[in-house]
Figure 1: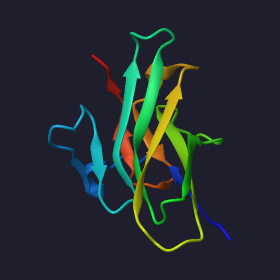
Figure 2: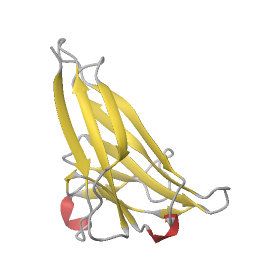
Figure 3: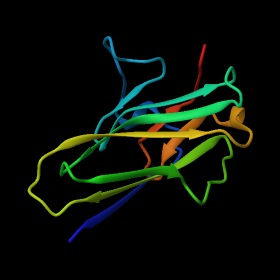
Figure 4: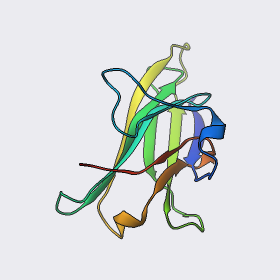
Length: 137
């Protein structure tokens, strides 16, 4: 039997009050956040106007409880009232096996719409899982 856990990103205006820390070290990228108290780690959102078409890329890692777990990461069907925040949906399906923590990579690329308007990306259901969208230099 599989257990389904649905998590979603949404936008919050209080960024630093939620326990987020800037990532550091040789693997940290500009704008990368390590989100404390959340299954999401090292969440990054980047806007690249140099690519044709322009892209908005959201990527990071999510901690799961079983190695066979599957992760679905996509744009949320219902967007919020603030059109400068891109809401994302995260669905984790844990396998029915002994618990053994694992890290899964999440990645989403948006190429349609007015990408430059997005200033933040948030996972619905995790108000503290929010990052600023950074321009790629």
